[in-house]
Length: 487
Image 1: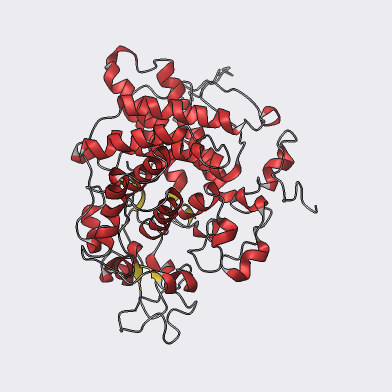
Image 2: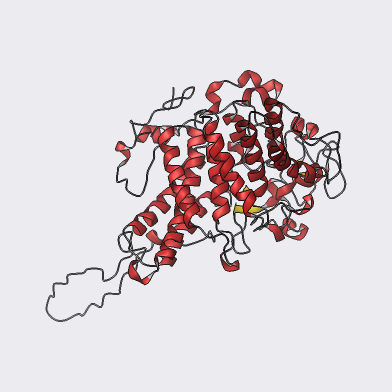
């Protein structure tokens, strides 16, 4: 889905006015002959899709939002610098990005509900457009509800001003997410043609809904009945066969595999719409790298020795200097190798067109394994086989005593912990670890020993932005954070 568009609603198209000067005073009633705004926009499928592009651009644009927002998640145990001191305005930038994205999507949904496209567009295309819109909205709200709990739930039918917006209960937000994704699953295609690569297809929506269900089964809702739904939804993806693992661990994030067979949906970059320069990931001796972000030293050191470690992490620079030597990796840990798959020439030119993956087939496998284990009160062969697909690839398809495959002899608790650890390694730095830590309530256990004193239950939710609290007295702050400046 192409991200870069002009902001339609900042463009006013007016006809020129020809003023005829005569010897008499002429009263002119000047009225614009043409004006483009929300009420007369969305008259074509292309205009609907323009809203999608804008919504994605809110979330992934160089130096902003998820293109440069690792610091909002660095309090997990993977990133360097995370000390679990979470400020009162932490993550306000992605809060804003999500609601801006939703504000772009909701009018498009409303226009489709009002049938502004009319009879010129077939219903199947209208449903496909609606499915894309609801998928994007669901992803936004899923991020919001996990990070902030009860959040304002603004839909296409909501017509409110700031002073009337309140926080909707978490259960209500999840109900909207589920409803949106079920529609998306019913109406999205199995696959998109090459000219529309990058758009979410049916399997992406199913995998996202499986993750929604497994999150509802864990904290804070802890409704174990959702494990069955998570298992069944993930099983549909596995049984479908549209996606599969990339065989070679070194090729998972190759540019040639950006749109499959494993990666289902991403934030997309392109030659005319690049990502944030790769210097944020590169150590000092590589292309003038800044090392803005990287892997925590303890996490790097404890990553099991296997081919995956050497693929997903950058353990030495172009001169062969290890992260354990010299000062190139000045923070002491590895660099994040999975986002450095562009060419050296491009990296030296301060540019990258690498996508940022959000939904992968590996995730579907591990969601299935986790849910199947919980449903059956212990691992069966299906759960073991699913988890071992990613483990086997990580080990280069050989037995590895340092990181053995899982077995049916494990207890439910042992298998569950092993799957969460496999998610830790396989999905590292893909914005998944923080969510696993908070839904499993293991943040304080997994954080580095020196930061455990900074951890308490309040850290499982982020603070609402102070600016929103000032503007809207109906919003309340999450526990443990200031409700206003000076508190």
